[in-house]
Image 1 (tube, helix red, strand yellow):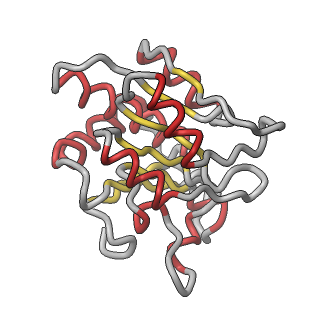
Image 2 (cartoon, one colour; image 1 turned 180 degrees about the horizontal axis):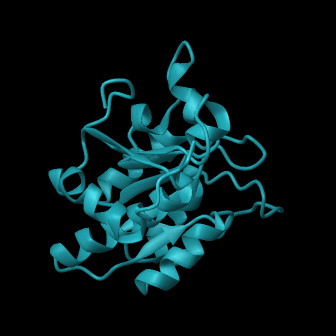
Amino acid sequence: SYLFDSKKTLYSTEGSTLCIRAMLALAKMYAVENGKDVKILAARNVHKSFVTSCALLDIDPSFLQTKSKTLLSEKITIKDLELYLKENEAPTALCITSPDYLGMISDIKNLADICHKNNILLLVDNAHGAYLHFLSESYHPISLGADLVCDSAHKTLPVLTGGAYLHISKNAPDFFSEKAAFALSLFASTSPSYL
């Protein structure tokens, strides 16, 4: 947690897939704990593990429509989110991939501001951006206001065989840091990596 300036950072030996599952489980548990319906809004370019996690957790996600012409790169804009919120009830969480598979980075800071003003959690699949914290100015989603973030350390940092991190923001309710290990254990294998 010290290195990434998070409230809590947990390790995954099953890559970001495990962390994405845990983030969705946490969002669902949080909604239920607060007597709310579970509504997850997502960008259309989410990882396959998001879709399978929704199936496992019985979450029916909504997908944010944008003007993007491709499924690989979809930069969610402030305008896209504001338009959605004007026409729909606020979701429990917004889940985005940033950087996406072509390296496009969303405006996390302003998306986080809008989410928090509307009591929405911002979950970021930062699988390809663990290095963003180590730039001269941090562009890591935790630094920019996201609530829950997964980093796939084996993609852009010197970590072997599926090493990943699940970060809980200092600004996120304590519920998330208290329940994160449990959420990971729901999907994690007890088999260690031999390396």
